[in-house]
Length: 454
Image 1: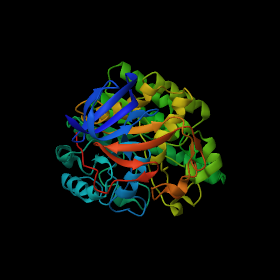
Image 2: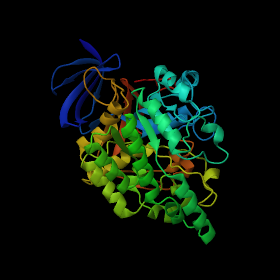
Image 3: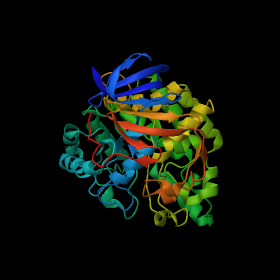
Image 4: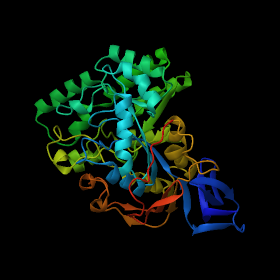
């Protein structure tokens, strides 16, 4: 048999460890894993000697806001940046205009953005007090999961958040009860708004404008208390939960204890929280502003402990693109969010090279576990029968990140990463057996990406 592609002499990374294996690809799927030195014919042979082959990253949490806010990001610029960061599938949040609060909108959005997609994508549906009757229909239409905010929309952004809000514990209970019946994951942004309003008011009255006021306006108790309530409700209604972008070690401990009781809850964190502390807010101000906020160095180190003991389930970017004008105001008025598609694999390569995380744990948390959490059965592994999604990495090829070269429309806001030296480099990113990115350049066409569903 003559295969379409053969990746030879690479070191394949998985949760089971690292092995020298050749990868045979046919019709976009992994056809076989072969011991090296076998005489195998293929239309295209790639010599990956000296390279590590990682499963393509499944990013379980990101924002592109296409359609409706394409000046911030669209599916072409966003998925190019994602491919540059080793991501082969994105699970995209439902914030758009209109937000994804009905089955029809989900279908329309998938059809609208697919021609701009370089990599594969799944779409979240909204879940809030405004669209309870639409939730099952969204699941039937292919929503990968549901997202709920437990605080109001930012002023001026209300039309982006239809169906996303639970303004009180009663509406949260009702919404979680309905989502639980779909069998899909319910992903919750957990911060207690009443406390945030109180802390923010006091800090504004103090006259301070330094970056750290953002952390102090949303201290860990805001996250911890909201997580505790969500766990209590989720336990009662039988929800399959994800606590999104966990930043507080105290909140992760609550999840750890809930897991020990058999509660169906997953913990998600992001590169921003495990690679940056609140010192970045001192240095970069609004450009390091994120919700929940960056926290202390001690807290950051504790999050790594939860990664390595298995409490933290997966790592997602929470890529949140903004144009510079949205960040150039003061710390209180600047929009919250950090663009990070390009950074997830380079940061993890650094962590592996520094012995902070193992190859196997990185593969599990970036690819295998999120594919499992979101029921994307053909993603997350480089194994026969799975989509041939993978990343070839030179673990020793250093480079310096230049935010001006990012494919993201938010590249100009990526000051927290600009000029950072990385210890390894992505050589190429492949989606369903097609090379889409190589040595910093997009080499496939828009529309290669496909809509995937659980």
